[in-house]
Length: 120
Image (cartoon, rainbow, N blue to C red; front, side, top):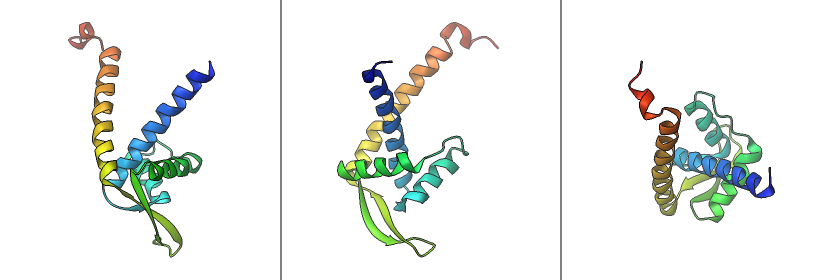
């Protein structure tokens, strides 16, 4: 596998995590651990969010202006950064959701060809 192929795969994974973070923050501000837990719980623990992937993604999204970060205190009385979706982040989520729908429909068409659809 070439370096370029590896980079493409990593970007795809990061993009998917970014989309899931934006979707999670649609419900309101949350700190990193809560975001990871929401993604894991929402996927019925199929998706596991590693902190080594989560925090770089959060920093990247802040840098891009898609989310904002504010210091606060977590429910267990610890200092934490709380992340919120920005207007730019909401627009990006809408665009990414549209792309995701097209991608999953395209994959479904390949996995379930037309001639097989009518068969039990």
